[in-house]
Image (cartoon, rainbow, N blue to C red; front, side):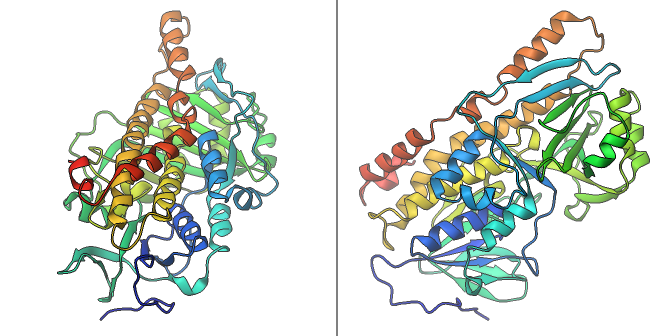
Length: 440
């Protein structure tokens, strides 16, 4: 059975091509909104019965906000942030041990902005901008095929299929579309990092009640521990504290695999407290507020992909470079993906017959940077969990501060305009005969 798009397709001309997006998460909707606004026909296929975002809060770094602004979507996102506005918010690192000494404060430049926002609010902002007729729920992609023509075909769990001109795989870390690129099927191309994360949301009224020494109300914080750390980010106008509690078990085998249906499981307060029993009073007070929480087994695309593109199929966001959350940059990279991919697809020189050029340039431009951030995110997690055993080990504390001081430099100090210009220049240098040889 083949499903038809909700909108009537005009006869294909050199300027008419159709894009199908697999995945209705944040990155998928960014692409859908931008392409639809540019006049390209778009259909979004989401496996759930409605739009929903698992998780809690996200932190948008300065590069992410610049990319959103470039897409014309920053104001729409900010308007759903419950009064929060982009601001200069230093990221403060303190010891998880008794005394909670200040280790480092990552200071932003005058032109920098960051924003904490709930995932659901971000998703709602984007969903409001889409034509409901272009959205198809309960459509779980199982694989992508390509018949005699160059058009990819999306196959769904319910037995239906959809033929289109271009597929953007934005179906997350468990991506089925990734298999069409990498051929990896055994473990979905994602590896368990030996780290678990417990996620919780706390009311600031409750936090004030337990009288913590550390003020978490204004800026993001990280409690640095040994094989553990805690990230806190104020959201919803500092009414809610988004808390992510990380614990790494280095004794686990490198080959350990977690069944996909066990990546997220319920957890108890006692389980978390037991893992952080060596921490100081602020950590204990914060964790005492847990009522219910889920445990997430952190996975990352490993090894990094050698290509984000195959034929007329492209990966974006976590499907392409699902990473550890330690730099808070996964969504930011997804925004950059969406911006550059959509700019290329909407370029006046791109049409139905040469659309693969745009995808090849996207891969050449975005993949090296995204894979760098993927690798750096894993390193950041190691830094956060390297608290010296002795409080007076000045040499190790100095090395820790030096690492923290440069955490976001290559991520945030990225020249987005230069990156875009390079992509457009590269597109302009290609001709029909030369595109195949340039990317070998």
